[in-house]
Each structure stands twice: as structure tokens, then as C-alpha cells.
View (cartoon, rainbow, N blue to C red):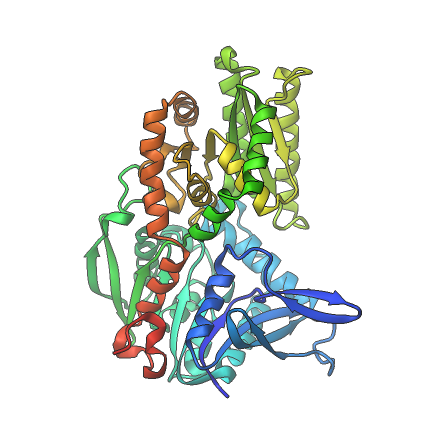
Length: 504
């Protein structure tokens, strides 16, 4: 039976565990995140399918299960696994996606090098995803493709199955034309994205940047522009826009453009934050800190996250404010997402060197100013630290959205705590009550963290109440519904119209 909804995402929607020589497919340990939200849509359709890739030393091995059936709490659905060799994964994901595309998407042209990119392999992998989606999709089905490493899938899919409705969501920033056009394959990428019915981005700035890039190379007509809704118009963000293009015309087709910020599972986080186990952990953390203040910073080990700039700011804080020595501690969690990549290894070494230098210069037997954590922290423990931290210091140089800042606000059911947030995080256009910081300015960074540490309780609560309201309004479910509703009644197949609540 063909599928009414096909989700194309590089990750498999479960965890594979070997038990007594057999593979078991278990639900993800944490229900917080995008994958569980996407799977929740399967319960609303007659038949759903998920397309992902899986390591395979020999793709021709007849024992490799390309298609498996899953029956879990989210319903019954098919998972098509594309067998990719280690060489294909390295080329398609680590080299092309992470070393060539990633720096351009985040505006780091100086880190870009396309010489190692094997574009034929990138095309080959994207074609395999498109073929799998075409094989699974029913007549007029919705196919939802995710992220930049699958840029070419919509174009291939439109050729294979012109009847299906294609949506694409871009989970990273999208740069302006001057930066995006550094990519030699820019036209092919843009033509593929314009083969969609709907193209989604986190915030209006990325939508407008996409239109700018498309119009620089192709005959793209702006059909509709609208005023940005108040929920995405914070004036404290460097990424704010006053209006956004919502429809363009290309090659005789109309493409809807949607700005929908990804959110977090607020209900789940609040449940964790209110548990007895979390309360006990918070008490333990606060006893260790004593009457001092805790600053929490959480992110990946990546040059886009601004970890070095943040530690340098903390060092200047301790230098200029001797009264804070012994009274404030920074817990800096920086976990490597791609530990086998040289660029991230260098950043990790730099972080360790700088943290060691600061601790050596200002620390004592009783107090170490920085706790640098480089291993993953269980989410339950992280929520406890969110509850205990006086300040969440989230200052990336560039970030498509940033969910850590939203998790922090969701966890603060006590309506206390201060969020210091980079103007260059997509979330900054939503969270107007955060203390804004420009990570490219010493004065801004240093002033923001001092301001946050000195805020009185009444103002802390006023800001947190406002931020929590926005995080709850635009949570993970809002994002998914908002993206799917972009199809509208006129293009959504009747048998799955209730997927978006648009059924008659």
C-alpha cells in the first residue's frame, strides 16, 4: 500500500539496539525534539513512510533490509533505509554538507573549501532519496523533505512524480545572495528548491535571503509579500524583518514560502522540571554553588557557536569585576557533534586551553570559575541545571534557530532566571525579552552578562514570563502544524486533509 505522507530525513526515526543477536527498533530515549513530532503525523494518515539512510559496507548484500515496518506509539509506518557505504557517507555528509555547505550557510566564507567536494556523489545520494520517496508515495501524496543535505531531492522528485505535493524545510540559516552564490552549484540547488510547493525556513530573514539568491540567478517573480507577524518581529534582533515574501512564481508554478520557527516540547520539559527527581538535583546543585551565581552555556563544539568569544568575555568579566571572583561560576557545555572532523577538534583544543588558562589565573582550591563539559549531558540532568542556573548565556555567532534558549525558558516554571541571547540566533526574533548580546562586540558581550547577573527579581520574572509565553505559543507542535497548513485546502489531498485540521 502506498503512503499518503512521506517524510524524507537523513536520520532513522528510532534507535537500533541489538538484543541476543537480534535488532530491536526502540523509540528515541527522549520524546523532546523534531523526530517524535514528525512521527506524530503518521497517526493521522492511512499510511505513512519515512526515508532515511543506513550504513552498509556492501549495499548489494541481499540480507540488508531496505524496507521495514514499524508499529509504535505513533502508529504504523514504513521505513525505507538507503544503504550508503562509509565512503558515500563521508563524501555526502562530512565533506559536502559539513565542510562546504555548512560554513556558507552560516556566513563563514573563510572556512569554505569546495575542492574536496564530490558533487556526483552528492547527486547520486539525493537521487536515491528521491527514488525511494517516489516509490513510496501514493497518487497526490505529501512528501516532506528536510534540510540542506537533501537539497536536490525536490527537483529529482518533481521529475519522477509530478503529481505529488512537495514541502521542504530548511533547518539552518539561509544566507544572502552574496554569500550563497559562492557555491558553484548554486543554480542547481535553487532550481530544485523551486520545484517544491512549499519551502519553509525558521524566520522571515532566511525567506527573504532565499528569494534574493533565487532572483539573482533565475527569473523568479514575487507574487505576494506580507507584513511580518508580531511574534517574529523583535526589534532587539539583528535578524528582524519588517515584511516577508510569501509567494513566488517560477517556471509557471507558484511556490509558497513559509517562516515557521522550530520550537521545543514545552509540556514534556515542564513535566521534567516539576518532577521530584529534578527538584532533588536542583537542590544538590545549589548547595554546591552556595551563595554564588551559576551561568550556564550549552551548545555544540562548532565555530558557529561562539564558544571562544564567550570564554574570552568571561575572562574579561573576572578581570574587571574582582568582586565576582569566587561568586560566579560558568558551566560551559560544548559537545562535539562530529568528533572526527579536524575543524571541530581544533575548536575543542582551543576551548580546553582557554578554560584551563582562566581557571589557572583566577581559580583557587575552593573555587574554579569554569566547568568545561565536553561529553553529552542526559536531558533530565540538563533540565535540572536549567532550573538551577541564574543565567543562560547563549551567544552563537550564527544559528538557524537555537533550541537551548527555548528549553531554558520552558524549564523555568518558577518564572525566574535570565536569558542572554545572541542577536544572530534565529530565536532572537521571537524572544524579545531576552537580554540581547552581539558576540562580535566586546562591549556588548561584557555589558550583557554583567547586566544579567545584576538584574533584580522583579525584572527577571517579567522578562521570563514574556519569554515563556512566546516559547509556549510557538512550540514544536505549532511549527509542524504551521508547515503542513501551508499546503492549504487547494493542494492537500482530500483523504489526508485532516492532517492539518483543514478537513471539511
